Amino acid sequence: MDFLIVQTLSGISFAAILFLLTSGLSLIFGVMNIVNVSHGSYYMLGGYIGLCVYRVTGSFVLAILAGGMVIGCVGIVMQRFFLRKYVEHFPQVLTTMGFALIFRDLALLIWGGDPLSFPAPALLQGSIHMGTVVFPVYRLFVILLSAAVAVGLWIFNEKTNFGAQLRATVDDKEMATGIGINVPLVSGLMFGLGAFLAAFGGVVAAPFFGVYAGADFEVLPLAFVVVIVGGWGASKERRGTTNVVHRQGPHDQIPRFSSWTNRGKAWRRCWSRPQGNRFWSSKKMACPYFS
Image (tube, rainbow, N blue to C red):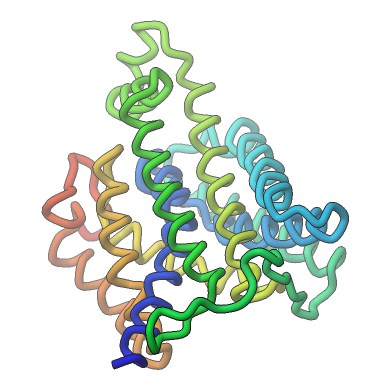
């Protein structure tokens, strides 16, 4: 029984990391309809930048903020100067794949190919005893942090003026422009927020998995599976993302089994329900090539 509890909590903590990564991709791919193959690179570079800041300052909070903000600015620049003019998916894939390869080569050039360890903050080291169950404190922190981010994103999207502009831009760009919303600015900030969340997740995940070149393409398929299975849309789509990651996290504790079933779930969902999960479907298609 103790083993089952520990495995379940470990799966939930992995789901929390996956949520931070995929909540950004749900904005970029699920809402803005931009196929961003470099999203995993944001995760990887966020971990590297956070590690550098942590080594210099010793502050985990500054490491998270610096990693997220630097990569968020990179995302805004990419959207503004390279991706905004592309509507079709094929040029988006080619452009972002090029950036992904550039980012990986830069990481190898600057930090080398060896994995780097990222120690957890002193306050979050050690384990907590819950009866006969022993569980790492940092993993519990990650679960709580992910829940706080989810609540913050909901408040931002549903209760703020910028969130209302974001929803209007997603629903009808022409009408949003007509009522005075700066659509290019909103779109750029939305893309930057997605990149920020990916880098944020990269820093938070670093004490779990370390930081290494190659993490980008390891996490990218998982992120796309979650967004595809969760479905597309604006605020409702993130409910689908939350639902899917909390199923996916415990499932991925069985690695030999999970890699094949991840592909199976994505293909099955694309064929059977291209609009995504029935509770969070929208007018946009989650898998336009299968609709």
